[in-house]
Image (cartoon, rainbow, N blue to C red):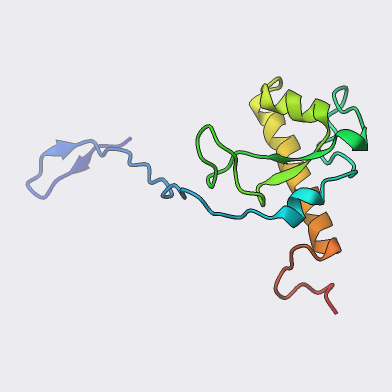
Length: 130
């Protein structure tokens, strides 16, 4: 950091301020339709050498986000389809943080695309809704 001058001419070093987005306590997105949509679906995480590819074990796995409550579940929109093996692997943080981010983001995108395709959620102005 460079030294700055005050109006009186004395030197000072500026502090770095980090502005955080205010924590959203509970977004309240809870949907039985989204939860039930996970039944018999393909796991959207598909973590290599972990995924059991067993649709019978797939559930809607909640992904901790800003809308989640510490120690509680995130809302139903912050979730993805997970087989038992991938779900446990992620809950126990058995991979590097960067890899966990990759697999959770990919799974959420895949799951949201499925929900849009099935009409469970809609995107205003979606060009495919003609």
